[in-house]
Image (cartoon, rainbow, N blue to C red):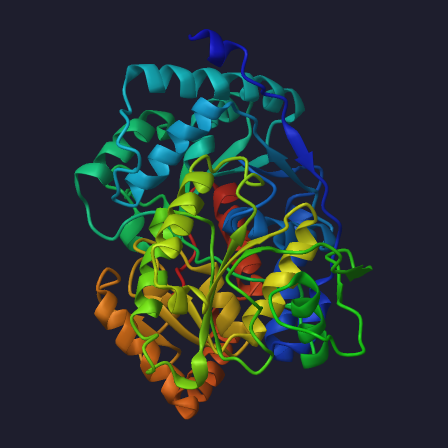
Length: 495
């Protein structure tokens, strides 16, 4: 064990979550579907009486896992089930290693660093320290959902404590390859004691997991969260003017929203925006991508693809907003600052007239709900929402934009293929690296408002049917029931 691993911070952080009733879905879903879900929730409450359902991941802020956990756990608590959320601690080297694993499972080399004996020793040392604290709060027969590669090394420790383990992997790659195999080879020894695996799509399941103990449960969004709740146009404008993403003056309404706990919230912080000159006007058509600053999201490809149509062809002088979190705010993403610097360098290399129509926005993250409300307003105001990922486990930003009725232009990779039928719920890029294909598709949706409207309407209904948290929770309830039976006859997968 290295000295740095031995002394790495490891105190588990508990994330406090309130409670929300599943009854609120009656305004969104058919009555009979809500009634059936409530029956499932009541059966789960009785089955789990006296037990705790734990979720363990690597960050409480930033990224899709944290965003999903907050509302899902609130609904679970509202159903009377004791659910708790713990975040592991690690040092910079640990998160560099797990970021390398993240890239590998996406089929990418990332920083190209090794995943050898030294990295394994460090990974195990950090998780062993976390496991000691986790074991102290577990009781036999608790259920523990471990999320993603950062937590895989906890599985054997949890099993020895007598709890029931589920490893939930949100990432993957559709095709095997050297890097994908490399990543799974590193993780496989830690997953031997795991009885059940959950993946976002069937293609992500590696061979050593594909033995009747793997189930596919697609991710979801919460339609009532600050990121997805309904906002009227004046509130949208007020928020965007306040944070500096749209030119003022604001309308005569405050930049307010409803917080996760139901209390009133107000956007008070400003975005840190790199631009030339003034912000876009309210009437300016906006092309928007909201993502972590990550090479796999291809922000430079978006920037260059948009630049290719800024030659008099972009309708009505459309402008681009590339938005992401403050690069110092996401604990488990050590590459964010470097990627953002690369994007800035690429932006500075563009001609002055092109740069004038591209805005790089770092959104404040000190208040999670405030950040979500800003993203909500930005997506609702967008003419086109882009997700030009090179690899994607599941595109939550895609689902968010679809729920808001936006036209979405996204890559035909990973879970996005399950979310969008090309030409029906959005437009898909066959080759996300083909910038000509991207530019052509972007120009098409900007030039055809009727197409954008049709795609947006179909997209919202698609999310209502398949990708809301109500469905997600009922599938987890059925899964835990199957685990309790001990026969691992897993529930039928969502098509």
